[in-house]
Length: 440
Image 1 (cartoon, rainbow, N blue to C red):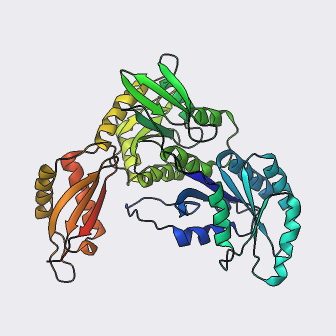
Image 2 (cartoon, helix red, strand yellow; image 1 turned 135 degrees about the vertical axis):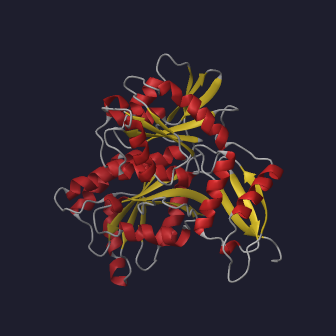
Image 3 (cartoon, rainbow, N blue to C red; image 1 turned 135 degrees about the horizontal axis):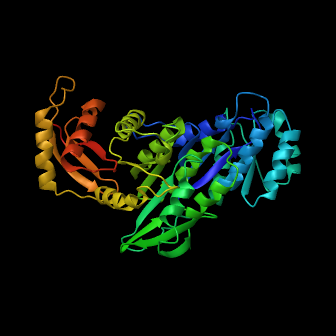
């Protein structure tokens, strides 16, 4: 089951980013130290009352120029209505109720979403009465807060928690590979899905996903079952006017929560953009296998060096995904589209790979002996053993006398040598260093 999405919306300068940072700063710890992974400050996962949700700060996407500002705000509201499960409608209690607040409220009231009206900057007794005027907006939930002074935040989170669903594990057919097709708007996700899952394919069923308007396509091809996440959502978004391209990273989050393998569609005509890199980094953060599919390859003038040059650009721009295979396709003509599923099979096999402990330790000792780590505070670092603790993705625990002495460069060395010896094409790796009881 995917995390619910909670969006903070409101007109500019009401404190959306301050509220976001207040909630995130107290309750979220970023533990992924993968070099090169881009983190966008506009969204983060939050745990409260044993429930998890993804928090979005729409304030992070506001334009710098004032011209057309309210139109941009309305677009953000429409995005929240379409994508979020819960909307925190933030207003400014110090300034009072404005015409823009009323405009936003009118739109939100027409939606079927859970809306929590939150009046910010209530940090003074003289402002408390101002909460009353916001009740005319007609929302059941009105929460006074001061994001800057940490007042009322607990009450707000308690209200959010009431709307969050209880966790329910999703059930899938045995052996199914769950695939998410992600990417920026207009890179050809819908065309790719249609070409791959067109009339020539046997569609076993169209099953409702866990999210509103989410339809997953379960297909069987060559006696192998694949579940494509939210194919209806991809097709639907291709038919509407695209707004706020930066939100494509948020849309990708919903699918990445539920998949095994992400197929990231890139546009050959555009090269690698900042948004491509952000979405690619999400696959690492989510711990998913990844395939890079360069679409519209038929539109590129090529010679014998083009593929290699484009591959070099991808590897340079997406340095944190050196393990992801690259395939050049055309969803329009069907070029190499049929090769995607065999590639997904291969990546899934690596993503699910479990190594035998004796062989793993034999290779690991050769790795550390060929390049011992630097001493830590004058003491030699000793490795005792390594064990694989889980799969999807492959995760390893290394027992060592001084885990705090392992430098990031040496961590990368371990990652690279494990890949050289065991493969793991398309799959992220996680390696944790832990102390043995009693150093020596």
